[in-house]
Amino acid sequence: MWMTLLNEQGIDEEGLLDSQNTHQGINAYFDEVKQDVFRPRSIIADLDDQEINRIQNGFLKRLFQNNSSFSKQQSSLNIYPRGYYNQGAELKEEIEYEIQKQVEVCDKVDSIQIQRSLCGGAGSGLGNVISDIILDNYFSQIIHNTLVHLPDNKDEISWNTLEIYNTVLSLHSLVISDIVIPFCNTNISNMSQNSFQLQKQLNFDTINNVVSQIHPNFTCGIRYPGSINASSRKICTNLVPFARIKMMTATLLPYNYFRQNQINQIELVDMIPYTLNEKNFFFGHGNPSIITSRHIFRSPSIFEEELELQLVKLYQKQQIPGWMPNSYSFQYCKVSSPFNKNQILTLILNRNIYNQLQTYQEKYDEMLRKRAFIHHYFQEGMDEMEFQEAKYNTADLITEYQILTSFEGGQEE
Ligand SMILES: Nc1nc2c(ncn2[C@@H]2O[C@H](COP(=O)(O)OP(=O)(O)OP(=O)(O)O)[C@@H](O)[C@H]2O)c(=O)[nH]1
Ligand SMILES: [Mg+2]
Image (cartoon, rainbow, N blue to C red):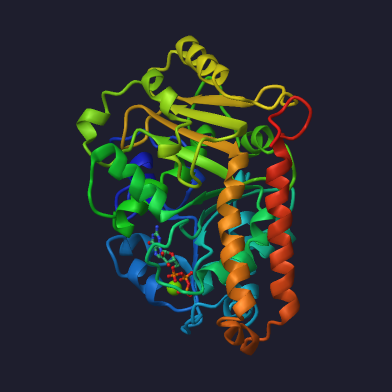
């Protein structure tokens, strides 16, 4: 994500200003530490320090050399309670203080963005500690925006046999975010295979290059001019009609990164029909059942009437629930992303993602019935009740998605 932002904001890998760019909105993600020297406004946290060292000694080492990072130099052993209760909880005060410090120096805070995976012990457990901090300190004041990696639907090779436990045990924390954008690695890999006939699975770096563009596109409205523009709060107000339903299916068009020259030719109007296509979904499968959606258009040449006409045509073909007054919204930004001249980020509140949640629930129930691996969690202080609570919370969440269209005028199951 920081490579995208450096490119967009005209800053080089050492944090120095590159004079060729306009630098609009530069202060949204970067602090100016001395004249023309910028540092990311970010916090990196993990239980072991391997990944943190990789960032601090890697390609962007000059940029991250004084960055706030937190670790315990101990592994989470892949289990949620080490991240949430034990080693992770010991980092809570330090991280809370740093977040408060970074928030206080800002004139105005639009949102706090979190990126994590629910599959591992640190991402689920320590990630929940950080979500709690944001809730305790800034509930309803600052938008809490989570980009989250969730397990794949099919039995793909995973690093971690405990990912279903970690995911279901920490799923409740997604409900306290204001907006959640989930993704599965397989979805991203398949997307690229569909469009480029690539045979092999993508590696993490390539997947990260695609996924990491979500947050910068989400915030283009507060960084750049556009005729209809929006803050994170405004986007969330339009997208989230019910307090606990906030997981959005995202699509990002065109697939950047590959075949750039060819892709740069594609016009926004030509991409619109594909924005709701399941083949492009970052999360979930099958035709969407759309409750709300938002299209964020980025291009130096936007023909608003033409785009709005295309959107009307697109939504005429969708079955929108009768109780929903106007299910889609959009915004325009005149500054392109560094990868494509024309780009559309679409966020869809898609009732059908309950199918994906159900697969987690089924796998979790099966493992729990066998009591597989459960002793590892008990050794870290968890008890049976917590496993049962997570099970019922997940079932409730699934029901809340399922009933979304069953109001008068909607599609009944
Ligand atoms: N897209 C993407 N997925 C990743 C990346 N690194 C890891 N993953 C996936 O995320 C899951 C969790 O990764 P971990 O490194 O175990 O997560 P963690 O939060 O550090 O947890 P622990 O290592 O268990 O403390 C893995 O099973 C991978 O499938 C990455 O760079 N990009
Ligand atoms: Mg790890």
